[in-house]
Length: 167
Image (cartoon, rainbow, N blue to C red; front, side, top):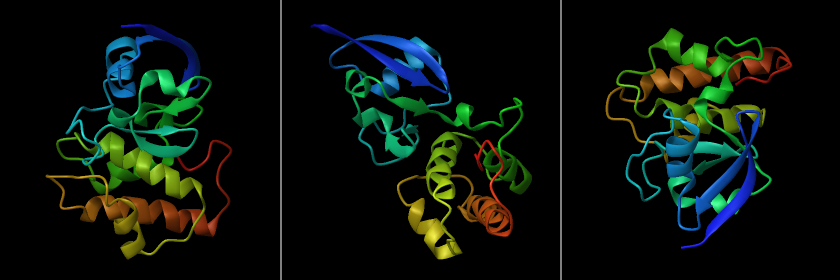
């Protein structure tokens, strides 16, 4: 099997990705970068546990080959923190609302929410649920997650985003 070499920015850090042509972005992030916040769930792109942002768009990393993202930027939930190193707005809202129980789905939920929170759209609670439809959670019943995202979106509507964004 042939290896491919790519330059990928992960959470603001430029890295060289040398991976077998068949290696998923999920496996590369976990095994070579140490990004254990990106979870392996179903391996079929239906649970959202492995969601990351690629150039600002939420994508299930189990469905993308590491070799396909040469020159692109990947953000995991760990990369959503504030520029000062603390929790980002979404992360803090999840903490405040108790939106993570076992934590398995949390990373995927955060990056998916970051995509539409970053778009600046005013979403009602039904739209938030619809936007998160590809992320499965077995613990929270989604209410606390929707509450946390709603808090951030309401704050977003009442002020301009901070320099680092709402993530």
